[in-house]
Amino acid sequence: MTARKGAAAKQSNGNIADAVAKARRLVMGRLCGRIPLPELVGLASPFEAVYSLLDRTVSSNEGNSALLIGPRGSGKSAIVHKALAALAEKKHSGGSVNGHRQAVPSSPKHHVVRLNGFIHTTDRIALRDIARQLLIEQDLENILIGSFADAFSYILNLMRSAGADDDETQQHNQQQPPVLFILEEFDLLAQHPKQSLLYTLFDIAQSQQTPIAVLGVTARIDVMDLLEKRVKSRFSHRQIHVHQAQSLTDFTAILRTALSVPLLPTPASIGSTSQSSDSYAIQFNAEVDEILATPEVETYISDTFDFGKDVQQLFRGFIPAVARLSPLEPSLSLSCVRDSVAKEAMSAKLQVLASISLLELCLIIAMKSLVQSGSSKYNFEMVYNEYKTFMSRHLMAVASGGAMKVYKKPVALKAFETLVELEIVRPLVTASMGGDGASGSTSGGGTLGRNDLLAGTAQGARAPKEYRMVQMMLEPGQVVELVADRIDVPAIIRRWSQSIM
Figure 1 (cartoon, rainbow, N blue to C red):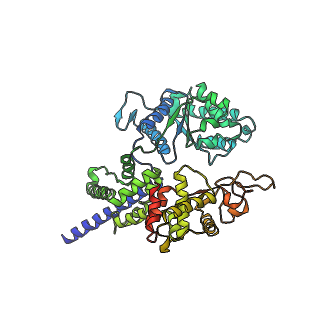
Figure 2 (cartoon, rainbow, N blue to C red):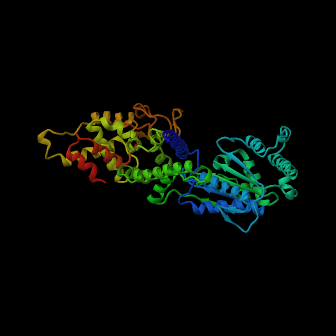
Figure 3 (cartoon, rainbow, N blue to C red):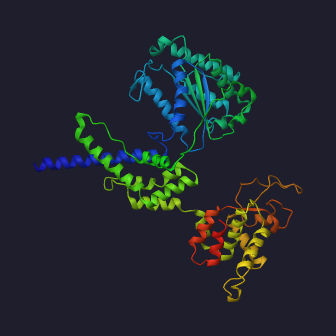
């Protein structure tokens, strides 16, 4: 009896260890983007549009083209992945999707070709990869000498002849299998010379001679302006827009979906193993709900949603806790989640500014005041005048006490140059410098240091350095947070930072 209990306990421990390893691998894959989420939260409408377009090409041999447009991290690739998975499921399940039988025949054989603007930098590279993904083994050296359209037509003809010999497609021997082209980073493909790839694909889709669907995926909303007129004439102008989470509830649901562990099916042959896995999954999901309900995590989710709705940034706060899952620690550690969330929420700029002088802090508040009044760019003279005006007006009563004073302009200029060196203040640079023939950098490029304000790379380089235009690289809310974290700030300066909100 004792031996039996020991064997049962050992088997139970093994089942728990296996369940923990599977949960860690699954959740970590979701958080890192290797495994798609099982549910598309708030993306039902664009998914239906994409699936309908691809399904009409596969089932009805239509030629279609569309653009899937949305910001990065909004779920465009997840929509495409799920649509292709649904088509594959329909193909193998005899016309049913998600377990619901449909009154249509099963989908015929189709091919999927994926291109990426980061990888396929020329049309020739793209053509070779199209042939590789369509399993065309013939030597294409002689074909590539001709035009892109001729070479692409030759590849399609080879695929048609290969499909005619396949037993599975014998009934479709007079018609080429549908081909679905997924063009990731479509805007980079649109920057190829002559845009031969896009023109050929759109032309074939419009002519209806070959059943293909062309789905471009991009984050640029002005991508249509990149297309030539002849390419636009072949494009259907169908655009599917994907938006980020519209509510905090949806944003939290995305995180909950990524962290949740699904329940396993329960065949009779592995009943005890499945019960152990299910009990662990139920307990794990309950702990996830408790962690997401803690005030620190709720604040982190809310701040991430308000700042930019970046799902990847939201996921990064939970990666360390998931990576620590093990048979000895099978649950998510709340303390680890709190630490990682606090590190993600911590601003690197505020860490740099933690030890600046009071004068430098006053100059930052003065720039914040200028921003609040509508000035998007300013120079040192404007900042110093704002600082001097406030100090002269509000510190007249305490001047006799000697607690604070108005610093002279040369001292303030040195403090201003320190902020430039810390890259908190960025000199506005010109696209090109005239007169002496020296070339400058474009705005936003290169590392800016203290000498940039003095060397003449700033906008208005011929003017004295006090009059060269700059911008502050902090948001007004960050300035308020910076002042609030300092304990050595006088009350009058603290009220100054808050009064202009």
